[in-house]
Length: 244
Image (cartoon, rainbow, N blue to C red):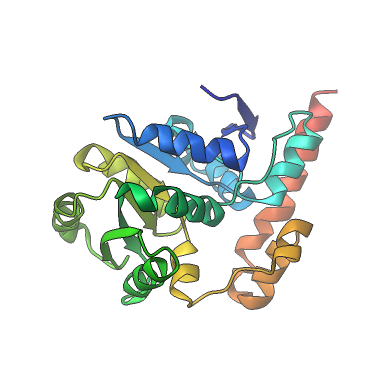
């Protein structure tokens, strides 16, 4: 059991990237089913307004801090998290660490054709990675039973779901018991990055904490969503003042 640090009613595992990877590898040794989520400040604010999402994050087996804002909030609140553990970096570490162990992956999400491109690029970058199947994220509720069957038939042990928050978290939680995989992980837009249809911020920008600005410049349509960032910091300082 890792230490959990509460950030606005969302329990974040206080782990380093190496410790998060170790936790994932340990999950693969069990017969149990596990949910992994990677909330940033936006998702924590969504959970603040959405009791269902909040409940799901509280029931997850591993919740890592994907964002400089979450790390900063932990410092302000006096409950310092070890480091940022971004979802895409964790997934890359998982690919690299499981490539020789014949661990199967299934990719669910993205626009038509994106999951397929992501699969091709992943195998190109990690030649021994085993992508058992993929499916785009555009489907009706009536199609879900067939999708679950396809995932189970693929024998994948890790399901990567990129439907965007909070849809991916709710989808995983609602269907985890019907899935045969050991791990279901929400990865948001990482599928697009793997497919090459979106780009990651340069490393120096990611380390500086201004990845949100890079993403806003690249995707101006995110402006409304990003209003949650100042709201998150306001809530953080408000919480800090209440504790004095």
